[in-house]
Length: 170
Image 1 (cartoon, one colour):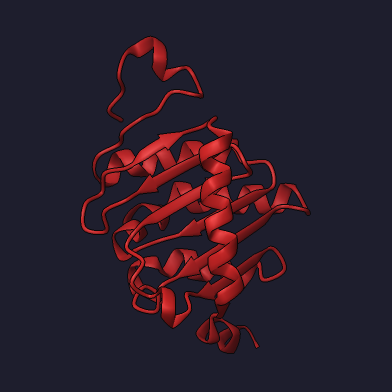
Image 2 (cartoon, one colour):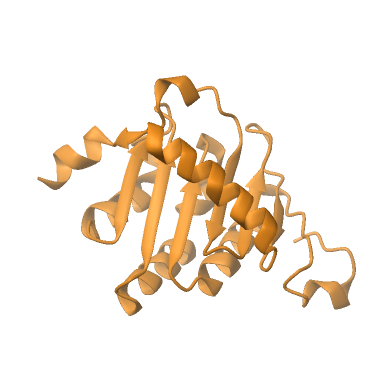
């Protein structure tokens, strides 16, 4: 992960700038491992490369199984929903239906090009450009995490449950 200085990399408030799938995977894993109760994900197609990584899926599963109040909310654009690259993530959602909710973005929000992952109201990974795996990450930036969570909540209210996932889990 690209880091400003080695001492700052240990500071959870440091702003990191991962580039590429490997660094984004490491950042997402670090965030999910730090999560206590809530993970929210709004992915674009490129994000499935690191979100569907075995280690990230394992950390999500561990969080959801160790804490019965833990929740994973995934808000997907229509073109990302059920993409084969995200199969491990969709399979996890089908297995843990009481802890995971998957919604599709409303048509009015379909042009959203950003992607982010937040943990609780503390940490986040934010990718402003859909075609580049370049992100901003912090384990401990509550104001920014809350801002992304508020945007997620507004999008969630306008969204609907993913019909493919609902159909497959019946």
